[in-house]
Length: 349
Image: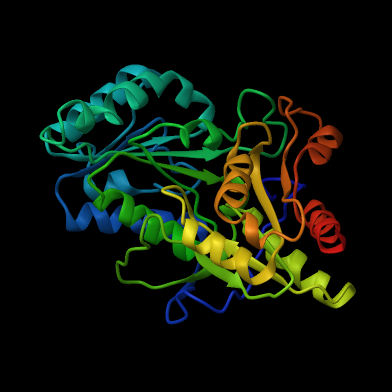
Protein backbone atom coordinates (compact mmCIF):
# COMPACT_ATOMS: atom_id res chain seq x y z
CA UNK A 1 0.00 0.00 0.00
CA UNK A 2 1.42 3.47 -0.82
CA UNK A 3 2.00 5.90 2.00
CA UNK A 4 -0.56 8.29 0.58
CA UNK A 5 -3.32 8.20 -2.00
CA UNK A 6 -2.50 11.84 -2.66
CA UNK A 7 1.05 11.26 -3.92
CA UNK A 8 1.95 7.91 -5.56
CA UNK A 9 5.38 6.30 -5.30
CA UNK A 10 7.40 6.89 -8.46
CA UNK A 11 10.75 6.92 -10.18
CA UNK A 12 12.27 10.38 -10.13
CA UNK A 13 12.18 12.41 -13.35
CA UNK A 14 15.29 12.12 -15.49
CA UNK A 15 16.69 15.53 -14.63
CA UNK A 16 19.79 14.71 -16.64
CA UNK A 17 22.18 16.64 -14.40
CA UNK A 18 23.95 15.80 -11.15
CA UNK A 19 21.83 12.72 -10.71
CA UNK A 20 24.48 10.11 -10.11
CA UNK A 21 24.24 8.59 -13.57
CA UNK A 22 26.91 5.98 -12.77
CA UNK A 23 25.13 4.72 -9.66
CA UNK A 24 22.32 2.30 -8.89
CA UNK A 25 18.60 2.94 -8.70
CA UNK A 26 17.61 2.89 -5.03
CA UNK A 27 14.84 4.34 -2.91
CA UNK A 28 15.12 7.67 -1.17
CA UNK A 29 15.03 5.87 2.18
CA UNK A 30 17.86 3.54 1.12
CA UNK A 31 19.96 6.51 -0.02
CA UNK A 32 19.52 8.19 3.36
CA UNK A 33 20.39 4.97 5.18
CA UNK A 34 23.50 4.53 3.05
CA UNK A 35 24.66 8.02 3.96
CA UNK A 36 24.28 7.28 7.68
CA UNK A 37 26.05 3.92 7.35
CA UNK A 38 28.97 5.45 5.48
CA UNK A 39 29.27 8.32 7.97
CA UNK A 40 29.29 5.84 10.87
CA UNK A 41 31.94 3.76 9.10
CA UNK A 42 34.20 6.68 8.19
CA UNK A 43 34.09 8.67 11.44
CA UNK A 44 33.96 7.12 14.90
CA UNK A 45 32.68 10.42 16.31
CA UNK A 46 29.36 10.00 14.48
CA UNK A 47 26.40 8.47 16.29
CA UNK A 48 22.68 8.30 15.50
CA UNK A 49 19.92 8.73 18.07
CA UNK A 50 16.17 9.23 18.02
CA UNK A 51 12.77 7.74 18.68
CA UNK A 52 12.54 4.55 16.65
CA UNK A 53 15.95 4.50 14.97
CA UNK A 54 16.32 0.87 16.11
CA UNK A 55 12.77 -0.08 15.18
CA UNK A 56 12.47 -2.83 12.53
CA UNK A 57 10.98 -0.25 10.14
CA UNK A 58 13.93 2.03 10.88
CA UNK A 59 12.56 5.57 10.68
CA UNK A 60 10.69 5.01 7.41
CA UNK A 61 13.60 2.82 6.33
CA UNK A 62 16.23 5.54 6.75
CA UNK A 63 17.93 3.85 9.73
CA UNK A 64 16.84 0.24 9.21
CA UNK A 65 19.30 -2.22 10.77
CA UNK A 66 21.99 0.34 11.60
CA UNK A 67 21.92 -0.61 15.29
CA UNK A 68 22.66 -4.21 14.33
CA UNK A 69 25.56 -3.15 12.12
CA UNK A 70 27.16 -0.57 14.41
CA UNK A 71 25.90 -1.48 17.88
CA UNK A 72 23.54 0.14 20.36
CA UNK A 73 26.19 2.55 21.62
CA UNK A 74 26.29 4.33 18.27
CA UNK A 75 22.70 3.87 17.06
CA UNK A 76 20.13 3.98 19.85
CA UNK A 77 16.52 4.72 20.68
CA UNK A 78 15.66 7.71 22.86
CA UNK A 79 12.75 8.64 25.15
CA UNK A 80 10.03 11.06 24.11
CA UNK A 81 11.90 13.97 25.68
CA UNK A 82 12.93 16.21 22.79
CA UNK A 83 14.05 19.17 24.90
CA UNK A 84 16.37 17.09 27.08
CA UNK A 85 17.69 14.92 24.28
CA UNK A 86 18.46 17.90 22.05
CA UNK A 87 20.46 19.25 24.97
CA UNK A 88 22.30 15.93 25.14
CA UNK A 89 23.05 16.15 21.41
CA UNK A 90 24.29 19.75 21.70
CA UNK A 91 26.52 18.77 24.61
CA UNK A 92 27.91 15.81 22.70
CA UNK A 93 28.68 18.06 19.73
CA UNK A 94 30.48 20.54 21.98
CA UNK A 95 32.50 17.64 23.38
CA UNK A 96 33.75 16.72 19.91
CA UNK A 97 31.19 14.15 18.77
CA UNK A 98 29.05 14.43 15.62
CA UNK A 99 25.52 13.44 16.61
CA UNK A 100 22.63 12.87 14.21
CA UNK A 101 19.35 13.27 16.10
CA UNK A 102 16.45 11.86 14.07
CA UNK A 103 12.81 12.82 14.59
CA UNK A 104 9.76 11.15 13.08
CA UNK A 105 8.05 14.50 12.68
CA UNK A 106 9.13 18.17 12.58
CA UNK A 107 6.09 18.95 14.77
CA UNK A 108 8.00 17.89 17.86
CA UNK A 109 10.96 20.09 17.06
CA UNK A 110 8.98 22.82 18.80
CA UNK A 111 10.00 21.04 22.00
CA UNK A 112 13.64 21.22 20.91
CA UNK A 113 13.55 24.84 19.77
CA UNK A 114 15.10 26.35 22.91
CA UNK A 115 18.15 24.10 22.67
CA UNK A 116 18.48 24.70 18.93
CA UNK A 117 17.82 28.43 18.75
CA UNK A 118 19.27 29.61 22.07
CA UNK A 119 22.23 27.25 22.39
CA UNK A 120 23.32 25.35 19.28
CA UNK A 121 22.79 28.22 16.85
CA UNK A 122 24.24 30.96 19.07
CA UNK A 123 27.18 29.20 20.72
CA UNK A 124 30.02 30.32 18.47
CA UNK A 125 28.64 33.85 18.15
CA UNK A 126 28.45 34.29 21.94
CA UNK A 127 32.15 33.50 22.29
CA UNK A 128 33.41 35.48 19.33
CA UNK A 129 34.10 32.37 17.30
CA UNK A 130 36.56 31.05 19.89
CA UNK A 131 34.21 28.45 21.36
CA UNK A 132 34.02 24.87 20.08
CA UNK A 133 31.90 24.30 17.01
CA UNK A 134 28.53 22.53 17.23
CA UNK A 135 28.61 19.82 14.52
CA UNK A 136 25.06 18.63 15.06
CA UNK A 137 22.54 17.28 12.53
CA UNK A 138 18.84 17.41 13.35
CA UNK A 139 16.78 15.37 10.89
CA UNK A 140 12.99 15.34 10.71
CA UNK A 141 10.46 14.05 8.19
CA UNK A 142 7.20 15.79 7.30
CA UNK A 143 4.63 13.02 7.71
CA UNK A 144 1.85 14.01 5.35
CA UNK A 145 -0.65 11.49 4.04
CA UNK A 146 -3.21 9.05 5.45
CA UNK A 147 -4.77 11.43 7.93
CA UNK A 148 -1.68 12.58 9.84
CA UNK A 149 -3.61 15.79 10.53
CA UNK A 150 -2.77 19.00 12.32
CA UNK A 151 -0.20 17.83 14.87
CA UNK A 152 1.76 15.29 12.82
CA UNK A 153 2.17 16.83 9.37
CA UNK A 154 3.48 20.37 9.74
CA UNK A 155 6.12 21.77 7.39
CA UNK A 156 8.09 24.06 9.70
CA UNK A 157 10.99 25.12 7.50
CA UNK A 158 9.73 28.70 7.53
CA UNK A 159 10.41 28.86 11.26
CA UNK A 160 13.89 27.37 11.13
CA UNK A 161 15.00 29.56 8.22
CA UNK A 162 14.58 32.53 10.56
CA UNK A 163 17.32 31.49 13.02
CA UNK A 164 20.87 32.81 12.45
CA UNK A 165 23.48 30.14 13.05
CA UNK A 166 21.37 27.23 11.82
CA UNK A 167 21.79 25.75 8.37
CA UNK A 168 18.65 24.34 6.78
CA UNK A 169 18.32 21.95 3.83
CA UNK A 170 15.47 20.14 2.08
CA UNK A 171 16.59 17.41 -0.35
CA UNK A 172 14.44 16.58 -3.35
CA UNK A 173 16.22 13.61 -4.96
CA UNK A 174 17.70 10.31 -3.83
CA UNK A 175 21.10 11.59 -4.95
CA UNK A 176 20.79 14.68 -2.77
CA UNK A 177 19.31 12.81 0.20
CA UNK A 178 22.62 10.98 0.49
CA UNK A 179 24.95 13.80 -0.49
CA UNK A 180 23.33 16.45 1.69
CA UNK A 181 23.24 14.12 4.71
CA UNK A 182 26.96 13.40 4.38
CA UNK A 183 27.71 17.11 3.89
CA UNK A 184 25.60 18.04 6.93
CA UNK A 185 27.40 15.50 9.14
CA UNK A 186 30.77 16.81 7.96
CA UNK A 187 29.80 20.46 8.55
CA UNK A 188 30.98 22.11 11.77
CA UNK A 189 27.72 24.00 12.29
CA UNK A 190 24.27 22.81 13.38
CA UNK A 191 22.30 21.67 10.33
CA UNK A 192 18.57 20.94 10.21
CA UNK A 193 17.47 18.54 7.46
CA UNK A 194 13.74 18.56 6.79
CA UNK A 195 12.69 15.65 4.61
CA UNK A 196 9.27 14.83 3.23
CA UNK A 197 7.50 11.49 3.51
CA UNK A 198 6.26 11.82 -0.07
CA UNK A 199 9.86 11.26 -1.26
CA UNK A 200 10.69 8.13 0.66
CA UNK A 201 9.62 5.37 -1.71
CA UNK A 202 10.71 7.23 -4.81
CA UNK A 203 13.62 5.70 -6.69
CA UNK A 204 16.60 7.48 -8.22
CA UNK A 205 20.18 6.92 -9.30
CA UNK A 206 22.71 7.15 -6.46
CA UNK A 207 26.48 6.53 -6.57
CA UNK A 208 27.69 3.82 -4.21
CA UNK A 209 30.79 5.64 -2.93
CA UNK A 210 30.51 8.53 -0.44
CA UNK A 211 30.12 12.02 -1.93
CA UNK A 212 29.07 15.47 -0.74
CA UNK A 213 26.43 17.83 -2.11
CA UNK A 214 27.57 21.32 -1.00
CA UNK A 215 25.31 23.12 1.44
CA UNK A 216 24.04 26.39 0.03
CA UNK A 217 24.50 25.37 -3.59
CA UNK A 218 21.44 24.71 -5.75
CA UNK A 219 21.00 23.35 -9.25
CA UNK A 220 19.01 23.88 -12.43
CA UNK A 221 16.83 20.79 -12.86
CA UNK A 222 15.34 21.85 -16.20
CA UNK A 223 16.46 24.75 -18.41
CA UNK A 224 13.83 27.11 -19.79
CA UNK A 225 13.39 30.62 -21.16
CA UNK A 226 9.92 31.84 -20.15
CA UNK A 227 9.30 31.30 -16.42
CA UNK A 228 11.47 30.22 -13.47
CA UNK A 229 10.00 27.86 -10.89
CA UNK A 230 12.03 27.66 -7.68
CA UNK A 231 10.77 24.58 -5.85
CA UNK A 232 11.71 22.72 -2.70
CA UNK A 233 11.59 19.08 -1.59
CA UNK A 234 9.02 16.87 -3.35
CA UNK A 235 7.65 19.87 -5.23
CA UNK A 236 10.76 19.86 -7.42
CA UNK A 237 9.49 16.71 -9.15
CA UNK A 238 6.02 18.25 -9.37
CA UNK A 239 7.51 21.39 -10.92
CA UNK A 240 9.45 19.32 -13.44
CA UNK A 241 6.34 17.38 -14.48
CA UNK A 242 4.36 20.63 -14.64
CA UNK A 243 7.06 22.11 -16.88
CA UNK A 244 6.95 19.15 -19.26
CA UNK A 245 3.16 19.40 -19.54
CA UNK A 246 3.21 23.18 -20.01
CA UNK A 247 5.70 22.84 -22.84
CA UNK A 248 3.36 20.42 -24.63
CA UNK A 249 0.08 22.14 -23.82
CA UNK A 250 0.96 25.84 -23.90
CA UNK A 251 4.40 26.15 -25.43
CA UNK A 252 5.68 27.68 -22.18
CA UNK A 253 9.29 26.73 -21.46
CA UNK A 254 9.81 26.59 -17.70
CA UNK A 255 13.18 26.61 -15.98
CA UNK A 256 13.01 24.52 -12.80
CA UNK A 257 15.57 25.29 -10.13
CA UNK A 258 16.17 23.41 -6.90
CA UNK A 259 17.93 25.54 -4.25
CA UNK A 260 18.40 22.42 -2.05
CA UNK A 261 19.36 24.65 0.90
CA UNK A 262 17.08 27.23 2.45
CA UNK A 263 19.76 28.67 4.71
CA UNK A 264 22.18 29.56 3.23
CA UNK A 265 20.06 30.25 0.17
CA UNK A 266 21.71 30.11 -3.25
CA UNK A 267 20.86 33.66 -4.26
CA UNK A 268 23.09 33.50 -7.34
CA UNK A 269 21.12 30.55 -8.71
CA UNK A 270 17.74 32.22 -8.17
CA UNK A 271 18.71 35.66 -9.45
CA UNK A 272 20.57 34.21 -12.42
CA UNK A 273 17.55 32.20 -13.49
CA UNK A 274 15.25 35.19 -12.96
CA UNK A 275 17.53 37.28 -15.18
CA UNK A 276 17.10 34.70 -17.94
CA UNK A 277 13.31 34.34 -17.73
CA UNK A 278 11.97 37.53 -16.11
CA UNK A 279 9.21 35.64 -14.31
CA UNK A 280 9.26 33.69 -11.05
CA UNK A 281 7.07 31.13 -9.30
CA UNK A 282 8.13 29.82 -5.87
CA UNK A 283 6.73 26.50 -4.62
CA UNK A 284 7.12 25.19 -1.07
CA UNK A 285 5.22 22.77 1.16
CA UNK A 286 5.10 25.18 4.11
CA UNK A 287 2.60 27.88 4.97
CA UNK A 288 2.43 30.92 2.74
CA UNK A 289 2.62 33.71 5.32
CA UNK A 290 6.17 34.29 6.53
CA UNK A 291 7.42 31.13 4.86
CA UNK A 292 10.08 30.10 2.38
CA UNK A 293 8.09 31.40 -0.60
CA UNK A 294 7.93 34.83 1.05
CA UNK A 295 11.69 34.90 1.57
CA UNK A 296 12.47 33.97 -2.03
CA UNK A 297 9.93 36.49 -3.31
CA UNK A 298 11.55 39.17 -1.12
CA UNK A 299 14.94 38.28 -2.60
CA UNK A 300 13.53 38.76 -6.10
CA UNK A 301 12.02 42.12 -5.13
CA UNK A 302 15.16 43.41 -3.40
CA UNK A 303 17.89 42.16 -5.73
CA UNK A 304 16.16 41.08 -8.93
CA UNK A 305 13.50 43.75 -9.42
CA UNK A 306 15.01 44.99 -12.68
CA UNK A 307 14.60 41.51 -14.15
CA UNK A 308 10.94 41.06 -13.19
CA UNK A 309 8.41 41.25 -16.02
CA UNK A 310 5.50 40.16 -13.81
CA UNK A 311 4.68 39.86 -10.10
CA UNK A 312 6.14 36.83 -8.33
CA UNK A 313 3.63 34.00 -7.82
CA UNK A 314 3.75 31.76 -4.76
CA UNK A 315 2.52 28.19 -4.36
CA UNK A 316 2.32 27.16 -0.71
CA UNK A 317 0.07 25.50 1.83
CA UNK A 318 -2.95 27.51 3.03
CA UNK A 319 -2.58 29.30 6.36
CA UNK A 320 -4.60 26.61 8.11
CA UNK A 321 -3.86 23.50 10.18
CA UNK A 322 -3.62 20.34 8.09
CA UNK A 323 -6.97 18.49 7.92
CA UNK A 324 -7.28 14.74 8.55
CA UNK A 325 -10.03 13.67 6.16
CA UNK A 326 -8.93 12.50 2.73
CA UNK A 327 -11.04 14.94 0.71
CA UNK A 328 -9.94 17.96 2.72
CA UNK A 329 -6.36 16.71 2.84
CA UNK A 330 -6.22 16.34 -0.94
CA UNK A 331 -7.56 19.87 -1.34
CA UNK A 332 -5.09 21.25 1.20
CA UNK A 333 -1.82 20.05 -0.34
CA UNK A 334 -0.26 21.85 -3.28
CA UNK A 335 1.43 20.15 -6.21
CA UNK A 336 1.72 19.96 -9.98
CA UNK A 337 -1.68 21.45 -10.84
CA UNK A 338 -1.22 24.50 -8.61
CA UNK A 339 2.25 25.06 -10.08
CA UNK A 340 0.84 24.92 -13.62
CA UNK A 341 -1.85 27.46 -12.72
CA UNK A 342 0.74 29.82 -11.22
CA UNK A 343 3.04 29.54 -14.24
CA UNK A 344 0.18 30.33 -16.61
CA UNK A 345 -0.75 33.41 -14.56
CA UNK A 346 2.74 34.91 -14.59
CA UNK A 347 3.37 33.94 -18.22
CA UNK A 348 0.28 35.91 -19.29
CA UNK A 349 0.92 38.91 -17.04
